[in-house]
Image 1 (tube, one colour):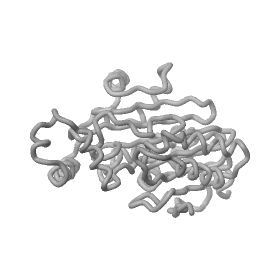
Image 2: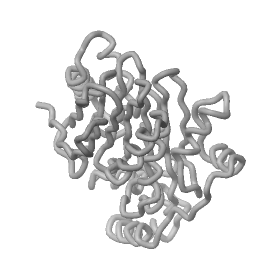
Image 3: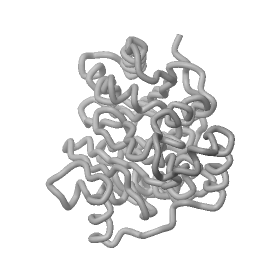
Image 4: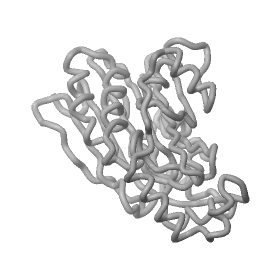
Length: 313
């Protein structure tokens, strides 16, 4: 069995720890959504991954909140949560939004209420290590007088300060095809470090941070979600494949879309995509501090591989 046939899983650099769980879910006969959820749950619980789940970076007020989404390529159904606080597995709450509600996206207090209703696992998401990193950043970047007034005061200028170190990356992306040929996609993140409270990136936005369609393929994005939200990148990649582009051609066309954006905060984006046969392409709009490696399992005797993304010319 080669990478154009049968089951497969692709995860970005943050998702390596969850690859075996995703693979095992498929090998047990699970659906693609089972694999995506299983893989992401491992990453969310791993405090060494400082941009997803527990141990992730807090916002400017020191609060950790998480965003996640899943999409079923067989039906087009999707579920997502944004600004979820106090629960370990945002991806599982997102899946239950899809399974139990007539809605697609819940945020903030509504997401937390729903998580409590379904018995989602509560957790203290802010670790000592994450708090220490936050305090150090605040000491180095924020004037004493501003820090003394928190949580009151003007945070807008400080939010722009967080752009200086490219803290907008770190989403985990999983794409899969199960034994029935059904495609699934999932994302999870603790968001941009030191972001303005209430900021949502692309991860919980269907069509921006992820998209899946059995007929054509799937896509998930990382890094500057403001850009992929403006360009509807994940949906665009799938539509370019619908129009006849190969998975690589589709990703490069989406890169051109991103590079056409003017104004606002602009930075790197990494696009992860598969076509309906499971052929992968991962392309970055430019160099990134972290995020060019990704993981791929093609369902055969060859094990999980770490590969390198292409940097678009």
